[in-house]
Image 1: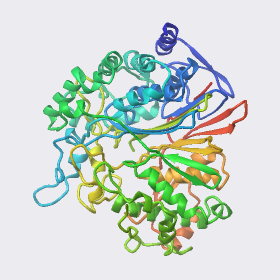
Image 2 (image 1 turned 90 degrees about the horizontal axis):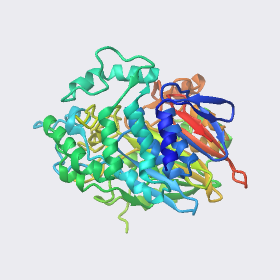
Image 3 (image 1 turned 90 degrees about the vertical axis):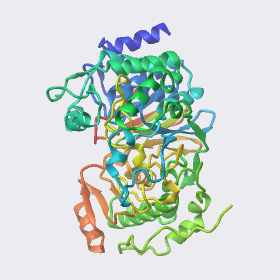
Length: 573
């Protein structure tokens, strides 16, 4: 263990760490690193939103850790080097397929505080006060990330102290920021000043610039308390007191008991066949797993492959499938610990066939007439990481603060940002949240309830072995991006790079518009508009991370692809 710690310290102290990639040998440290978009490996790969986080995960693999160890270390490092979404003050989901063939679905989604109430964001005139659910102290749900990390430890191999060490050193010694991070910090400066009771480390007297060093002493101390005291080092004691004090100063409602009583929950993964593969994904309170099962189920027998990638026919069919799935999301989905959700019906072949009866090729559907199905009674900012190891374990993790930098509120003295996940509840039936998603009573606020999520960490198996590990940030675009990624590889036969980086599209029922990413084929866009679709051009949809297994023989081979849309990086060894 001393040698392992020495390696971590060497990394963070900027002593050269040399890694061999498939194409080149390069030197990397927190003060000089490169962003690697593609790598091939025979022993393991980590793909995440930041190169230093991916490297932290690979270091753990190199020292005998498995994919779960690497996922934990990567999440902790992301809390330091990617504060816009990496977090201690948010929550997430982990989906894993272990070497023993066991599928894992771990839920550490945030919860509504015990003092939360159904109409807490509705004023006396019945109007929703969306600013309160988005910015500042009242927007925060009870964080779940740290509990999730410790719940993951039962599947890990190395001590937690070894896994948290890279994050501590990155916070304490610092790292240089990228151009995109400098722009992001500068863009959020006014919000940081407005929604904090003391000036956070992300605010400087001057503007941030590429190559500046970010040191986070308060965050390092918080990480040390977690290292030394375990889960109680966050949910009890000094850190918990700092969170409650911050709540009291800013009008928030998270209590000490809320923190002490928080628990991550292991759930039963959604597992279903698609073509010659098996999809393993996240159940409720993630809406994404159900949605991709619905979407793939609606296209499974329509021979998408013959329609080809990015043709008017394939995009139109997939758009109508997305529309119908999101209509059902708005009507039926919520936290199953609190409400009854007709999951079996929603994903049944009979129901999905019936949902497509009013589908007309070459004609745009209308969301005011295509609503949720009939159910009989029955018995921007988020971040994703994908990991695989040489033992046969694959892990897909998506975590979030919700909006970029969450509630924009940093816990004074603790150095981490709090989420604004309360906005993911349905504030009022029919009123959209920040992503335009509408909901019903199934997703209404209740004390201790987990808000509905779009996060969709997913693993695709072939012959009961990992084939694709994927996921993405992007709010409501997450399920449609994961859907398209699977279809791009399985049906259209695209390369992993094209499946990740080619322009995506998105429809979510309401608003009734088809979002298309820049670079989308203009001729297809024109034909869709002629059919009656209202197109909205957007700069970016998601940041998908993919690991594809190229060979599962006695000499396994993996390929990792990091999305070109950000600083995402793929690292292997």
